[in-house]
Length: 226
Image 1 (tube, helix red, strand yellow):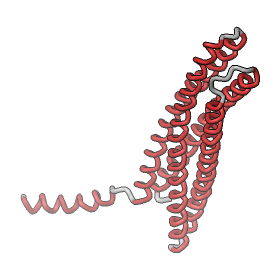
Image 2 (spheres, one colour):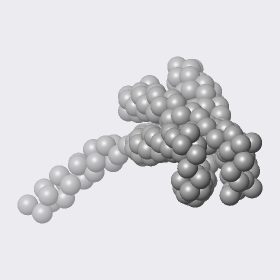
Image 3 (cartoon, rainbow, N blue to C red):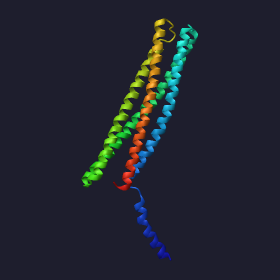
Image 4 (cartoon, rainbow, N blue to C red):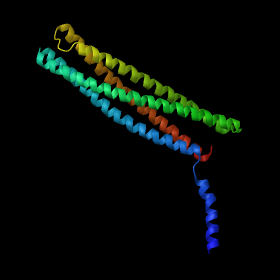
């Protein structure tokens, strides 16, 4: 009886070992998990940026109403609210710059892994697999370009926002027509940046969904062994 149990166990071992996913499949699964995390993060950013855009539009409307009514006290109170809103926007922008930099680094790492896969396929004389990996490499390079573009945009927006904040602060307490005109222009610029951020969020969600589809395809192909 004992010998039969041992023999049965030994017969199962190869099947168990062969059921273990290869390194390509494990990497595909890791990338899919990362895709899902990035999509959840993008959706949160979209909600936050939509809220921010609405807040700056309301501030702009309140500023116009207070100026039309020549309410000096209300304009002074709005200055404080605008500064607080820009401060919060700058903190969010800093977090998003760090996030975009991390995404760009991950995409570049995927390009490196895909290059190594192509080189292994060529070395081992597997042209069919090499062709599939070359296509994946092309997709990964496009993802790098997209992520670097997003990073550059976030960095430029953060720089512009910081410059707006500095200039707005220099005008605090001033109620002469030229200063009021300039503060209104600066507030409109921040509202415009918020709307552009929303458009960028929607574009990034589309790109992340595309990347998720590509990673699912890679997983299917790696499972089949191409």
